[in-house]
Image (tube, rainbow over all chains, first blue to last red; front, top):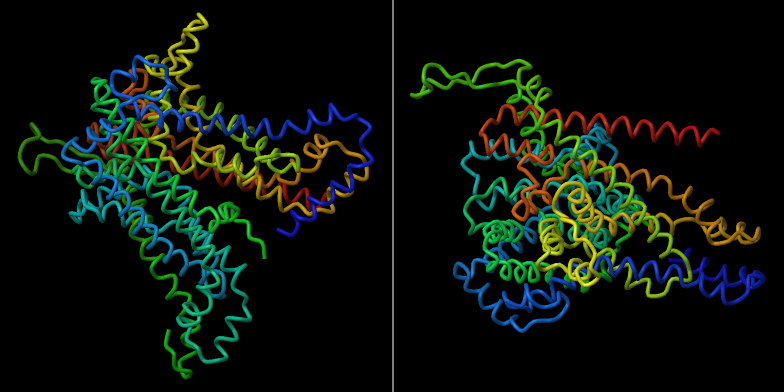
Length: 301
Length: 308
């Protein structure tokens, strides 16, 4: 943050002599960043605004009234969605929460172990192990998912919760972030001091290193949560029983059925609206704990 | 990982391997083994004897490079690859151009409402690709779209966004919408890490904000631009969710629109896992070759810059 503060102050001192351009032009130029960013925000919020409004429309209103005019059917749409296949939508929502919540938790633990080990120890094969793990990022998901499906079928595990949960626990990107974060947040002399005091390696990790790594691990957790919540391909390949579907797959099947019956459109739209709510809420609440900067691997020491 | 002092040195030596054990096991089971299995399958085929009835009639046998030559000759795969190439030529420059533009604007001291707009532009990252495709899919449908409403009122022609050339734009738009925010954050982060002294010198020379952006900021964030470019290309090659979701809304997206859709179709639609495995291996090899080639080129450039 300190660099930002310095830079904020510097131009104020530097620009005072540069008033030669005259005030009106300068004021207009000064508007460019704000206007550009607002246009960007309008672009990104447009479909979200649309789904919020469209979910309030009855099936009839959807096709007859102006797109951005709120309708009167939200309560009915909700009732229809609840009634659809005796409330299977909420099962999908629960499944998504289970896959994403438990999956992200396990994934964060594995990333924390691995990242800590890769950052603080010097051992044989460290770089080789790290590089092999990272190469996993480059593997197209379909290319992994199809043989994963065939192998899990041999173990009789397809179409189960585990078939969606297990392949997503190891996240190469999570390990990468955890390593970067651990090497910046856990000083070597603190670990050494722990050893001098006779603490075991496990104790040093849980009592000293892990608390220091918490902010980074929150980021890894959220990153994985979003990745698993948004995953479509793996459940698409693994699951056939729609009671185990996550939201993404459930909405897709709903759209597939609804493509020829516009009556189902309102269900799909209301479902899509409710599907984005939890993640938007999560974003707004956790924003202050989540350093977006870390997503790109940047760590300020 | 014992607590007793006598075994401490053993504990320290073994500890990293202990910490890495879960990741190693998971990697072996869910990365290495499936990849190995896919490569193995790609060299196999089923030989049907007689009428193909009975338990011994279908036998898996060695196929050599048969599946690979088949994949090279497959016009569907080639067309899928060409479609994705065209799609990538739109997505990558537009998405990264916008991401860079927004990052530079966020970084300028004059931007107001920056926290709000930053969050708004980043928001699509939280929205599943399937839902994004679904939302835009509806916005492309003439019956419900506000764009068509406006075009209709203005008496302008109304193109079919889900067919022919516009389909590429429609699909690209979904990817640009979903990916710009994330890339913006990556570039913005590296902009903020530029030391303040660099700007002070420029300001003493009387450089305008535009000059500072073009001559200082963009060259200094080149490494993160390279990184986002690299990951965008990889993601583009793997496009699957968006065209699959739009498929129910239009006849123009077929089951083999992108190479990965073709792999899926061969594996589960046609039940030919052997051809699918060969195609998947081929795509993985192309991805890896591109990645290594790209990283080597980037490294060489960095070294030249360091010495020059």
